[in-house]
Length: 91
Image 1 (cartoon, rainbow, N blue to C red):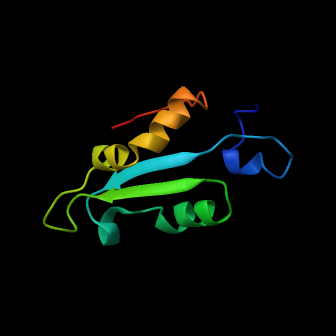
Image 2: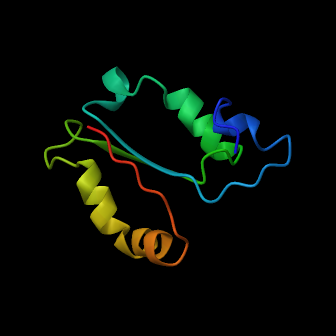
Image 3: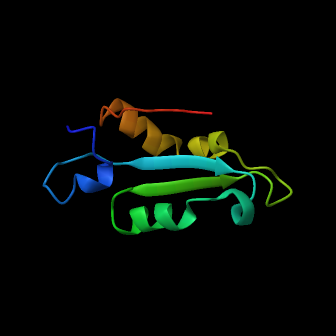
């Protein structure tokens, strides 16, 4: 795989990539979700298979990325165990 090109550029040249699931967190949707349009467009066009965003300060009960991971634990397990996924966690 040519890692010098963004993943979105691999689709037009016929390179196959697996599921691309993104989990990210922001405090406030209206203040901190800086790449909202780009990420939602990437999901809409299939560059990102699934976009999961946690906003920790937009509601009384805080929601963090780890809550989304727990909610999606079956899919996450399948991706790791069956699909041989690569998981990258930053923060």
